[in-house]
Image (cartoon, rainbow, N blue to C red; front, side):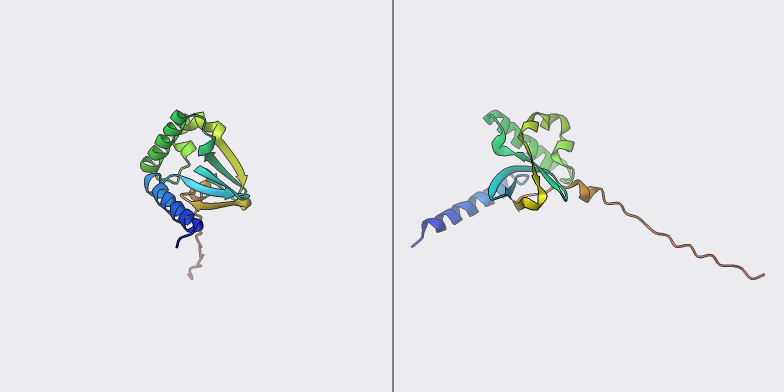
Length: 135
């Protein structure tokens, strides 16, 4: 006999599978026991910036947001944040941006972009040895 908790776990698993399959650019995060669904803009040591899908006002805008997310996912290298890759197009969704303290954020599902991963400086050190020639 299955319990309601079993049914909830099964439905949750199916939703997660469908979300990853149909919308691979969508991330699910928790912040102080609240769950958020959307696209992570950037995550660094201090701040996680996030487009909150549920904050988007109209169904038309939600549809447009998903189109832009799909374009970013398939047309970029996925390391560049969506707001840089689609700067003009995504600008209308500035009102849906939420910023959280990274120490309180847990990424449950989906990709996480970080400019820190792109801006890794590679320093090559050369050692020079001076040798005096005997004459």
